[in-house]
Image (cartoon, rainbow, N blue to C red):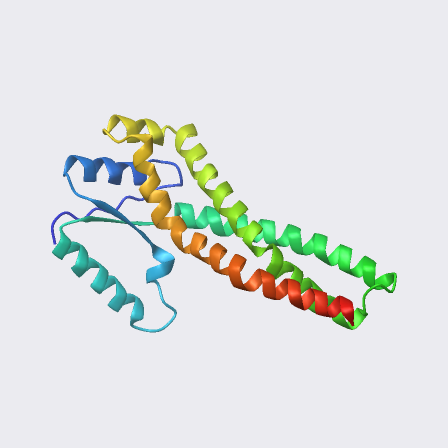
Length: 193
């Protein structure tokens, strides 16, 4: 199976950077694998998925990094921003319902359609903040120094970000083209009633 290494430690101690330096020195492509995409709640599926992943990595002669930094930052940011937007929406909608502008039985529908309309902005903002937070942490904890000393440029971080971001960007596009116009139409239908 080649080299196997387990880097353990608190966040920011350089585990990811050590893996990147090792891959650079060994002249191997480094593939970051989001653990949440591999781990399954069903018995046996996690082992099967990990086995497939390790076999593919061995066949391709690449190095795998099972990481969760960008994903963890994204999920945490997404949850916080969603809670803020939902709270503002709830306060606004309840205020309109108390004035009689909105039927009180439609408050949840209006909130749901409103959230769907805001989801593209929330996803894009969460993605931006999580990338900036990860880069800021890397600079503040000198991980970026290791990145640069190992012969990698800041531009080489772009493919790493794009591999993480493409599903979110695809979701934003689909939402913008399909879900947002539909939710706006539903909101208009509710107002017309």
